[in-house]
Structures are given as structure tokens and as C-alpha cells.
Image (cartoon, rainbow over all chains, first blue to last red; front, side):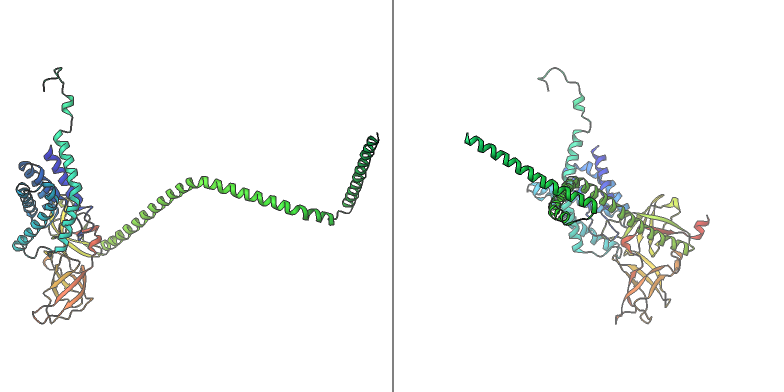
Length: 178
Length: 283
């Protein structure tokens, strides 16, 4: 259920990003919302479920964006790997670095992927712009706070189960048994 | 005894005075009445009465007027809240209506332009709507709501009323991805309309094109129109592409460095035409 729900969330985020947040094809101020989901998966969900969720998400992004298939898969999985590694290895309290790390990893992964792509597929990418990328990173960090809260609430709700089965269960009279 | 007799005399005197006074008044009144009824003249007495009563009447009337005004204003204040609410609602409705009509006018203009283009060109074409834009900073593509089921094939040219927009890059049964002509990976064979010199138009990722492979010995001027060349059979000949806005003549190299401003406004893409080949339509 969690897998299905987060795949759905990914779909909604990508659709929002390609419609409402992209006012015209050259609009630069659209936050990469999908990356917040990638970060959330890295911080909160187990590896197996995260990888399953990331697969349709990256596939969807490859369909909706760009001319190089598989680029978003590399981006999503690299970002996920980096964040997961950082979250397990960093000794500081997670709330301190959680959101800034999303921005830092986004910037790093984007730059590395851009360099790789411009090496393998020269003359297909729009020129790199630091200020635009940093601006997008800032937007991403701003959007990360509310979206993380939503994902957290959703995750908790899903872990409890949508239907209150425990309330429907017939209880015995023995109050001392658990 | 004497006191009693003097008191009675006083009373009689007072009564006498009253009778005389009343008699005088009545006589005067009678004379006045008779003279008035007889002559029907607005005399000095009438004028005097009017002049004396006028100010009083004026005072009372103005007081009444003020009272009326006050009452009306008070009632207005009571009803102004409701009126205000109603007017606000009306204003909102009018604004919404104005916005709708402006939007309708803009859509009408756009559609008229498209219709004119469609009627003017004798090429078979499919109308499409932009449903999504590339969210990445590195690519320039859009998604349209037409696919193979509608006759769209990979490589089909995409235009709008103003000129070339791009080329279909990938197709699905009902949707397609269009690579915009401003994308760095896009390259179109074009001609300078005046000199008929050929060149390759490349996207820059921004709102300009770069025109390559135009030899230095060719005279190119700012304002020259650029149209599709039609080589290779992908784009039909003569579709507007843009206007030359900058020509850089470098000492080194064999070619001009030319900047072209697109004839299409990429920020307002909404309705597009996917051009079909004649043999494709014939099927």
C-alpha cells in the first residue's frame, strides 16, 4: 500500500511540475518536486520499497522531460544513494542536516550528471547556469519543509492502515492478557 | 364694606374694558373682513402678517427638512451595509465577467490567427494542444495531445500561426513529445529569404536561434527573414522561422555568426499544428 501510494504521489508531483509550475517552456523558477520525494525515500523508507518507488518515478520523468532516456533514472538513483549514505554515516542529529542536505545533494548530483551528459551527448543540453541551478535548489529547499510534513503524515497514516482493523477485532473479556 | 364695594367696582370696570376691547377688535376684524371680501386686495395687513409668520414658517420648514434629511441619512446608514455587500458582489461578478471576456477575446485572436494560417496554407495538418512542458533546465520540449492515432509520426514538423515551433520527437498512440526548435539538439535547414542562401538553424536553449554555415562572402543584414529550406523533405519550403537580429563578422573562420530571433513566441505556446505529408493523408 505504501509503495502504491508513494508512486501515486510521485506521479502527482511530476504532473504538477510539468503543468502548473511550468508557466512556459523556458520557465526557470519551477522547483524539482520529485527530488524531495527521492530525499524522503532515502531518509524514511527501506531500500527495497524505495527502489521500487523510484523506478516508475524516474521512468515517468524520462518520458516527460528531455531527449536522453535513462538520464532521470541515473539522477534519481544517484541522489537517493548519496542521501541514504549521508543519512546513515553523518554523526549529527538528522533534523539539523536533513533539509540542507537535500539542496546540497541536488546541486552536486545535477552538476555531475550534467558534466557526464555533456561528455557523452555533446551539443544536446542547454548551457549550464549556476545562478539558475542555485535558484532551483533554494526553491527545492523551501518546498522540502511542507512536503516532508505531508509525506510524514501520509506515511504514518499508511503504516497504521487506512481501515481501523484493530477496532473491528473482537476482544476477549480477559483484560490482563495482551 | 367699603372694601367690598371697591372690589365690585373694579370687576365691573375690568369687564367693561374687556367688552370695549373685544368690541374694537371685532369691529376692526369685521371691517377688515368686509373690506377684504369686497375688494379682494392683498393689503398691508396681509403683507405684515405674511412677513411676521414667514420666518416662523421658514424655520419650521427648514427644521422639517433637516429632520427628513437626517432620517433619510440614518436609514441610508442602516441600509448601506447591505448595499455595500451587494455592490461588492456585483463588482466581483463584473470583474470575473471582464476577465472571462478578455480571455475569450485573447483565445479568439489566437484561434483566428491559427485559422487564417490553416486556410492560407494548403498543407494537411492536425490541430494539437500543449498539455505539458519539460520541467528540466537542460532540455526544451513539450507534450501535445495528439499521437499516432491522429496521424502524427516521428519527425512531423510542428508550427503555429507565427512559424516553425519544432519537430515531433517521440510518439505514443494519443500523445507526442515535441522537440522545440530552440533546443540545442535541434537543427533545421533554412534559407535567407532575400538572398536564398542556405544555412543550418540551431537552437541555443534561450529565445534565440543561431544560424550556422552562412559564408562570409554572403551579404546578410539585420532584419532579413529566415524561412525553412525544405531540403530533406521534413519541413515544407517557405515556412517562417525568424528574423536576423545580429550579424557578427569575425576575422577568423569562413562563416558569419548570425543570431536569429524566432517568429514564434515560445512563452505563449498553446495551440499548434502538426503538419502531415500528402502521401500520409492519402492513405
